[in-house]
Image 1 (cartoon, rainbow, N blue to C red):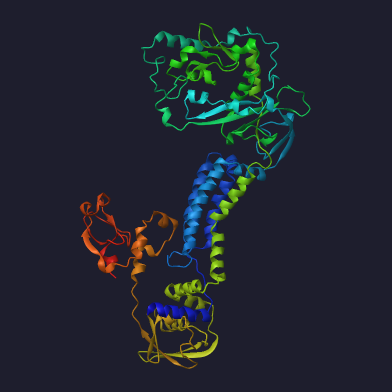
Image 2 (cartoon, rainbow, N blue to C red):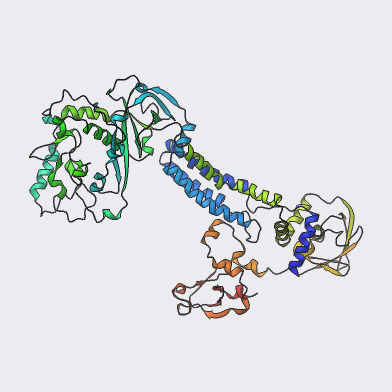
Length: 622
């Protein structure tokens, strides 16, 4: 009968008033809490440039603010609200969009594109370019020529052993490019014996001699490997290192020369990039935003130089390995060497490009003029190569994810669903929801809007004989409006107001019918009685009847919703919640699926064997 009365009230209400939509949280405040997080994510490089390390702390604080007060709160906390499904869709899509937005901000050029749009574009000649001068610039466009035929490539390794890193040959990935024999360095005046005695690394030679003198049985610097290297210069296997994820990225460095320069001209700057070769003479000086540091790009330069050295200078190409170094325990840098970068010498130690081995003595010595010219190449300015539209698509994806995260578009969608739906069933469900939960709010809205301007006057008599006249009503006024006016004039709670017309008590289910539909007219008399406040229905005492935020939705056990709809309350089994009865899950006690309260081990519970849910005594009562 109550359901039939509610449906009848909803039908009457549909003809009497237009339903309203009330949000539990303010969409504008929720959106305002979300926008700062989105701004910092999409402009992370601008913030990072201005604030440095504090940008990370700012991002963390704003992310916490955005998720807690923007994304998480519900528009419609009650699960029986017709639009609560929209909240769940917003939470699920919002969490996915938040993760994807973070990934795009950290791993794509979308945030770089945003940085370029917010900072001025500079058009410079190659000789005018300086990393310091363009510190705060956006996109830098150079009047230069990119010499891809003399490009160098090197592997940037993370959590890899020296052997794993050496097996990556980034040069083979440039097979489609013809490598020019035009040297990056002028080596005609460099002789093979041109070595400066005063530049020899005596310290490294001394360390190596002491290591060799110590012998293989001494604890310290020189010993046989047992296959458990930690990824050092000689550690070929590495039990500890093999458990890590080895990440290898190719970095590239291509010479930038003036547009009118002849083939083989000396570089004036370097265009660098990671993962793919440079493709444009425009870009940014902030190469540290991507994988690789200056020393990694310097190794790429060295790799290009090593391929061009004549036969007489091959001893300085960085591919001459110490044979004994495969058995060294420490890193190559401990002895003044670097890890060899060729497959044939994987796991060995070599001298850097521009230096050579000291025969019979150990250690490296600079090839004086070659080393000096190589250092001059290393000191040239770097430009991370970017086209004008690099990161544009990623930026648009970030905009889309940000739009999904904003609460305001979802609030607009909810408003459209509320007003534009043509489904009579859905509209009735909206009205029934208002009958159940929004009687008082609708009545207060009507009073606050000063709607008492009708020609009718209703007389209300109390049980004590006190009679009051309530003017301002009309035939289309609702019973809930009359009930609210009676509560005000007699100073009682709205929920305790009972009205009797004729000999019939008017229940709350009729609150959304008009006075004329109930048979009232101008000057009629209605009796006022104090009615007992209705007890809270069982479903509304259950935890599953509402979801106030996304945290409740994601952390909640799905059994809570089973308990909400359980139809077997008369068949519950009263049993003790122990491991013997239900298994190891009950070792630390059990949770009531009705109210989510925790109970100690051994506490008695009411078990529904059909739905496989547990109730405490209060939740088991109908």
